[in-house]
Image 1: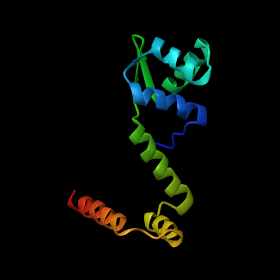
Image 2: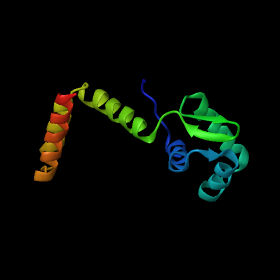
Image 3: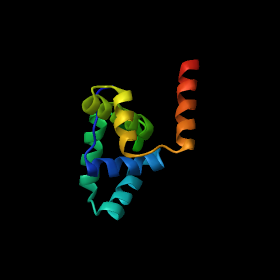
Amino acid sequence: MGHLTLAEGELRFAELIWEREPIPSGELVRLCEESFGWKKSTTYTVLKKLCSRGFFKNEQSIVTALISREEYEAIQSEAFVQDTFGGSLPRFLTAFMSRQKLSDRQIEELRKLIDDYREE
């Protein structure tokens, strides 16, 4: 899907939508005014921008996500590992574990993830 990113304000806006979708655009305007102090025009400008970038759609005044929060987080995680560790998950885990010891529970969760992945 590519390297899609959201600026801090865009991410806060996206979280409002993800938490409440489908959401009427008028309700989104009200929430943005309460949460961010935005005017109606600001909300619609940001919404239009994120719709054009493929994050959301606004059809018949109902806003829904085209990219879920989970998909967005996966894209960001993949980009981080790619950009920082040359795409190597083992290099990422080695760096992470060199500064923080994994608990037995975390080790078991990782083993289960790997086992589940192998079965697919």
